[in-house]
Image 1 (cartoon, rainbow, N blue to C red):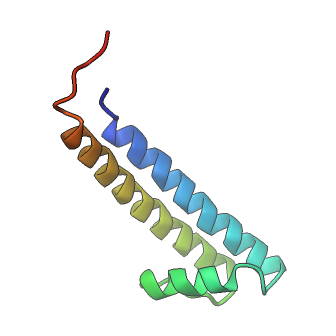
Image 2 (cartoon, rainbow, N blue to C red):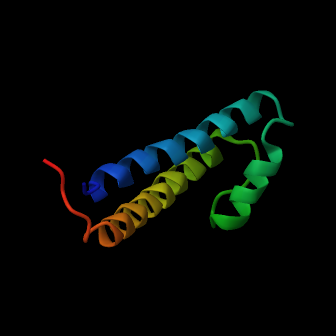
Length: 90
């Protein structure tokens, strides 16, 4: 069985972006929630700052979508390469 590279890339992009978005939105209401996670993310993604502004949450969400998509594509490609020699079952 082969994985869809595009499908897993989109799924992982949406999942990672949703995580950053939800933590960022809750952090706007409760400043202590997810502060360490957002500080970690802001240290990786240039242009994303943990400044508790909605625009920064959107920037982090965009970075999360791209980063998750690239990671999902790499995982699917690697899986397909490693499982390529396995017999297919009907």
